[in-house]
Image (cartoon, rainbow, N blue to C red; front, side, top):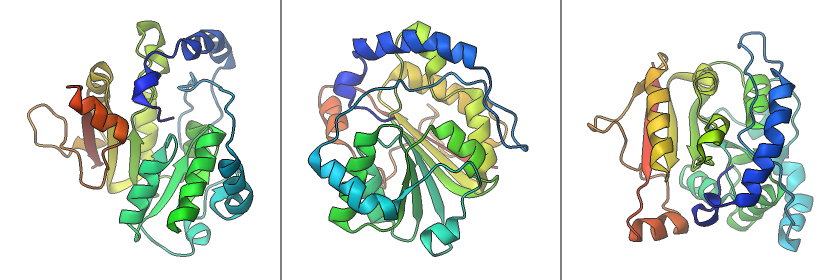
Length: 262
């Protein structure tokens, strides 16, 4: 899930919930996976949080959910039937309140976007934006992203993946909960078509370094950046969020990573 950087890194309540859930995750074992993909050992990268829906978010869920929100089915998604066309397919994992997703989809009407988010207020917020902006090339699934990717996305079926500002789990004991780990990146690479891209962004330097190491180690991917640092300039299609802009004014860094499938 994407979070507001202003409160994400100091969320003591989330840390406490993470510690509570860590043992449950370790006891959970592996999640069943598609026959073509080795199962991932599941340590969740998110914590369960109760969030109150605003009236507008609830209304968007009620009115627009039937059209734009997809159920988790555990069977491969028929993109053409879902979107009514055959177009480039982009997966966005953890879209938070959906502003960036809606912005990019509006910029790229020729592409189809599937957003995955576990928290209902964010789903409601994105549906509200879809209605306000009349953006029709987005569909949403409210479910654990790993399970969606394993069971609802076929191999070599996606043209792009966006993961912007995932929770950095800044405490060392929680680094194992970070989303960007070698098995997960291997899973993503298996769903990308040849030439497809994986775009990550983070405002946490230690996580950026880990991301770069993990992506460089995945043999199916190659770095699209020719910068000596290995990081990429921010692509024009990724808007600068208000929290990112505030951080940049304060001298904080933001790192984009752009890799393509061989």
